[in-house]
Structures are given as C-alpha cells and as structure tokens.
Image (cartoon, helix red, strand yellow):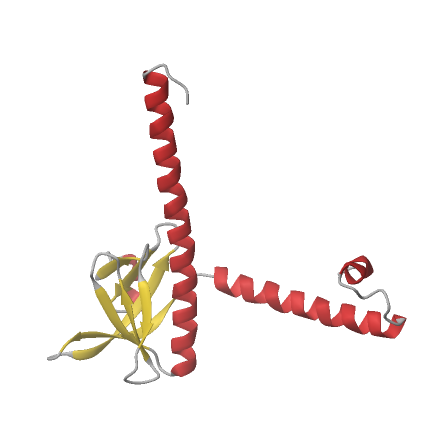
Length: 167
C-alpha cells in the first residue's frame, strides 16, 4: 500500500499518524486476503463420510479434487488414491447444498443428475468444504464457458473462411 492510494480514497486530510495506522491496517488486510487466496488455490482433499445406501449408511471416504479436470474423485481410503477412483463427479455446473438435517452434511449435485451426500466431522469443516467446492465449481464453470464460447467462435470463423465470406 502506498500513501498515494489513500489520497485516491479521500484520505488527504489525515494526520501522519492516522495515515500510517490506516496504511498498516490496509497492508494487514491485503496480507490476509493473499493468505486466503493461497489457501483457496491449494489442493482440496481429505476424509469425509459419504452416504452409500440405507444398508451400509455413512462410509469414510477420501475425497480429492482434480483442479485441471474439474472433477471430484472419491476413494475408499487415502491409501487407495493411487488406484482408479471409486467414483467421480464433474464439477462443471454442479450445485452444493448444505443439509438442513444437521450442521455437518452437504450434497454435491452434479449437472448430470448424480449426487454425493457428504458429511464432515463438524460444522467448521463442512463450511470449509462447501466454500472450497463452490470456489472450484465457479472456476471450472467459468473456464468451461470460456472454452465453449471460444469453440463456437472458432467454428463460425472456420465456416466464414470456408465460405469465403467475412461478417
């Protein structure tokens, strides 16, 4: 943060002490935001319970997000994550729904109709997973939308070139 930033924000009438204190607060806020962004960009994986069926109920599973593919994978355990996943759910267009039943559960509803009902150890962990998954869904949905728009544009341009017309 620079003192010039304060002038732009209407801080020209501050005393030196007020300006210094405000700059310090602004720097701490920026540092906090940077730290939060680094946390949101770190790999998302960990153990949650997944509802399997009425017979087996909740089962411990290791979940991991492939950020390049935008896919949530689950494995029977952390040890098994080198093997093919037990299940996978594309996050593009998915919706996260915190449960009304308790403060630990939430559902990941895929655009394909598939759903994973998951449960964290506590409400804080649920909020962490919900926030991170929503962030990942937004990121991969934006990337996918940009890809689709680019592909449509390229196809239109290709048709224009083939037809020798320009619009």
